[in-house]
Length: 414
Image 1 (tube, one colour):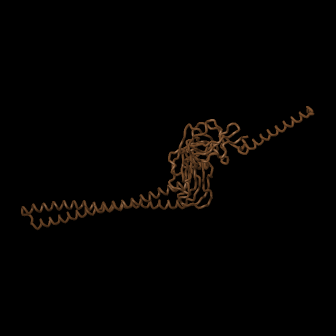
Image 2 (cartoon, rainbow, N blue to C red):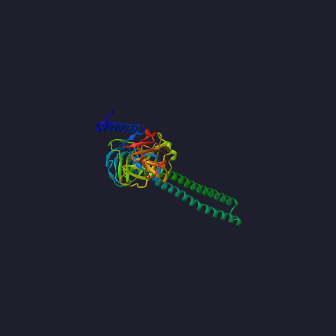
Image 3 (cartoon, rainbow, N blue to C red):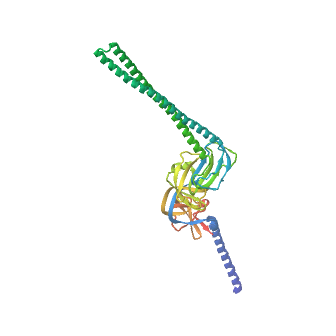
C-alpha cells in the first residue's frame, strides 16, 4: 500500500527542480551573451573620439608649409671690397632711417675717388686752356682775314682806276693786267685764309667735344664713386629692426656681399613650399589659409616660382591681416592652399577615420551601439570632411581609426 509523501520531501524535490531550471536558464543566458560577444565586439568609450555632424562650409585644400617673413625688408650689400672696422648695431636692435649699422674700411675707395677727382679737374683745366689757345689762334687768323679783306678792296679800287686811265690814255693795258692779276691773287689768298679759319674752328670743336666726353665719363665715375662711398656707410633707408648683420670685426667683405638686413616688422607675408605634384593647382591670386601659434589667417598667392627645386614649388602669399600682433619673423606655419569650396553641406571634424577615399565605412553612435554604414565623402581639409550620404546632421560619428572593424556592422560601446 502506497504511502503519501511528506510535505518536507515534496518541498525538497520542488526546490531541486527549480534550481535545475534556474541553472539551465542562466546557462542559456551566459551562452547567448558569450556568443553575442563573439560576433559583436565592444569598444571602450574612453578610447575613441567622436564628433557631431553639422551643416557648414568645407573648403578643399592642399597641405603646404611656410615661413612668416617681413613684407618689406631692406637687404644692404657692400658696394666695394673692404673689411669690417666696427659694428654699431647688432641683430635685433631697432634702427632709425639714415642710421649707420656698420663701419667699413673706406681708405681705398676714397683714394680712388680723389684720383678720379684730380683727373676730372685736370680735364676741366685742359678744356679751359684749349678754349683760350684756340680763341687766340682764331682771333689772329681773323685779324689776318680782315686785313686781307681791306687789301682786296684796295686792289679792286686800283684795278678800276687803271681801267679808267687806259680809256683816257693815262695808263697802259699792261698796268691794267697787272692790277687784275694782283687782285685775283689777293682774292685767292682771302678765300684760302677763310677756309683755314673754318677748318681751325671745326678742329677745335672736335677736340673740345672729345675732351667734354672724357669729362662726362669722369663725372659719371665720380658720381658712381660718391654713391658707393655713401652706400659703404651701411645706412638703413627706413625705420625697422635689424634681422642680420655681419658682426665679425676685421673680416673681409667682397663687393656684392650681404652685410645687413633691416626689416619693417609692421607687416608680414608668407614664403611657402608645396610638393611639385600639386604645381598645376597653384594659381596666382588663389586663396590660402595658414595656421601658426593657434591662430588662423587667410591670404592670397602673390607669386609662384617658375622652377622646381628638390621636388617642391616655392610661392609667396600676401596676408589679409599682415600686421597681426602674433606674427614674428621666421615663424613656421601650416599652409592650406584652397582649391575649391562646398557650401551648406553636412560636415564632420576631420580625424584618423578619413583616409582620403571618396567612399568608405564610418560608424555612427546611437546609445551604446556604433552602427557601420557606407558613406560617400566630398571636399576635405585639415579641419572638416564633407559627408554626401549616410550621415545626417546631429549624428555622432566616430572619428578615430576604425579600419580593423570595417567587417562589423555593429559595435557595442561601454
